[in-house]
Image: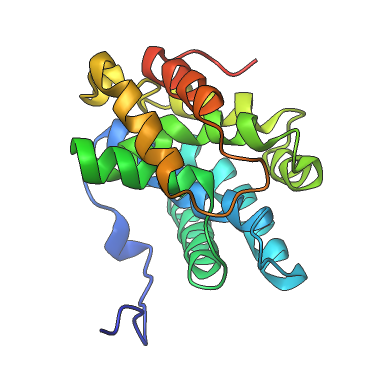
Length: 212
C-alpha cells in the first residue's frame, strides 16, 4: 500500500482557515514532535537533523504569532515550512518513545491524535534528555531556550493547547495498562524503555505536571 504522497501543495492563502486557537496550537506541536524525534533517531543523519532543527525553529516562532493573529501570512508561511520540514523528517527516519506512547494512547484508548502528541511530547523529551543530551540541546537551541521539555510544555500552555491527558479524555485507571502496552513491544529509543519510568512519565502527563 502506498502512503507517501508524490506532491504536496502548500499555499499560505489557502491555510487561512477559521480554526480555533487550541487547534492551531496542538496541530503545530504535533508537527514539532516529528522533528524532535528525528534528532535522536537511530537512523538519523546530518541532513535530516539539520532539517529537523529548522522545522522546530520555524514552528516555535510561528505558533504564538498565528494564535495571536490567525491572518498573519508571514507567520503562516513560516509554519508551513516548519510543517513540511518536520513531515519530511518523519518520512526519512524512524520514530521512538514519543510516537510509541502516542500510538498506544490513541490506538488503545481512543485519544485524539494531535492533542495526544502535544501532551506527551514534553514528557518524552524529558525522559530521553539524559540519554540523548546533544539531540535535546539542538531542540532547545531551535526554540531559543535552555530546556526543551519545559519550553514545549509552555508553548502548549501559553497558546491554548492541552497539557494533560486527563483533559483530553484519558482515565487514570487506564495508566497501568498504557504503561504495560508501551513496554511490551517498544520502538527503538535512546533510553531503555522501563515500565516504572514509563508509568511515572504517564502519571506526570496525566496530571499535566510541567517537566522538571
